Structures are given as structure tokens and as C-alpha cells.
Image (cartoon, rainbow, N blue to C red; front, side, top):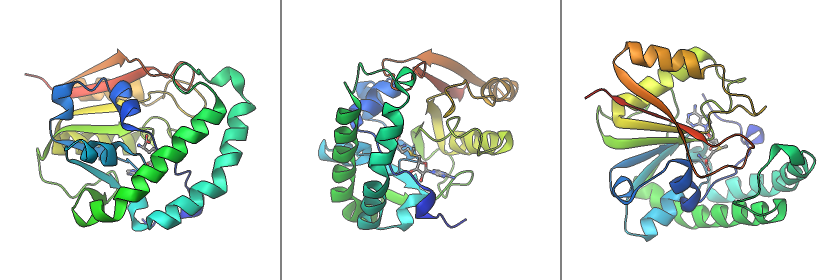
Length: 228
Ligand SMILES: C[S@@+](CC[C@H](N)C(=O)[O-])C[C@H]1O[C@@H](n2cnc3c(N)ncnc32)[C@H](O)[C@@H]1O
């Protein structure tokens, strides 16, 4: 399905945020990683600068970096105003303040934009979307999905979540998803049924506390792997 840029808030996170959201160890970072729904995160670009290769897949990659940056500029102040209007919803231990959050999102976008065209031609940014990904079985060790599944539970059905997670488990040995809250800061209604279904299919799923929290209460990730 073609994505409309007008419907997107292209906010991206940095490598250090990914590290904390997903409890990424040094050996995790050295493994074969795919970021699903990475959008304008600087994770891929920063990893590449460190000599590591990540593949990012997102429907947003049908647009140019300049188009994504224009959309970011059009929405960023409105989003930050919404954040300021709901102070009880946010924890500032990581970013410090809404103003600093804005600067951090600008920095991530600029880093992403500077890497995007070269990374696309190197196959590090790939156009694609859940629930179907054009990669072979077991292509990666780790599939990460930040701020897409569960967060948009009101927009994407349980069946979409189940198909998406099974697809990530097809292409990677382990899947990690963060956060587990919806935009309304409630635990996703899809989480418990999905864990039950994955366990009945022989996967091991665990909800784990992590060291990153911006949405108040959003400090847990889901880890899923095949049972040994
Ligand atoms: C809030 S952004 C998160 C970006 C990045 N993961 C991060 O945490 O910084 C959500 C991303 O999900 C992407 N997305 C939307 N529909 C998708 C789909 N069906 N499959 C994969 N990604 C999708 C959007 O294009 C957007 O880049």
C-alpha cells in the first residue's frame, strides 16, 4: 500500500536510544540486525559509522531524505507543543526537556538524511512493510521494531500484529519490540493474546524492563525467540 507522507510523523531515535530500549549488548550490536520500521532513526547511520552494518526496512523509504525532512519540519513544533501540553505523560530522565527532545530528534534526522542515499544504494535502507518482508528465512540474528507495533494498536489489528511478529520471526532468530504501550499509554490489548499464541506455537516470549523511558510507564520490551 502506498504511504502518504501527510499521515506520517517522521520522528527517529538515535543509536543510544536503541541500545537502551532493546538492551543491546556488544555482541548484539555485532550480530546481523534488521530494524523494521526504522524510519528516520539514526540507528543505521550511527552503526555504519562504527563499522557495523544494519539493514533498515520501512515504507517511508519511497520518499527522498529531503521530502522526509520537509515533513519533519512541518510537524515538529506541533508535536513538541502536544508533549508540553501533557506533562504528566512524559519522563525526562533521558532527554531532559521537550526542547532537548526536539534537538535530539533533529540530530537523528540529520544523521539519517546524510546517510540515506548512500545507504539505499548499499542495500542498508530497504523499501518494504510489515506484514510481509522480502528477506529469506533466518537472514538475520535480531529483528528490532521500535515505536510501531503495539504503539499503534488502535490503527493496526491483532491479526496484523500476529502476522507481523511471525514474519519477523521467520527472517530473524530473535525479535525485540519496544514499547508495549499504545499512544494512550495503555498496555497494548494485543500483547497478552499474542504472547499466548506465540507460546502455543513453541516460541519463548518475555516482557523485560529496560533502562529507557520517555512515555511514562513505557519501559518494557518484548523479546521472542524459538525455544531451544
Ligand atoms: C514512530 S516511527 C519510529 C521510527 C523508528 N523505529 C524509531 O523508533 O525511531 C514509526 C515508523 O513505522 C513505519 N511504518 C509504518 N507502517 C509500517 C509497516 N507496515 N511496516 C513497517 N514499518 C511501518 C513508519 O514509516 C515510521 O517510520
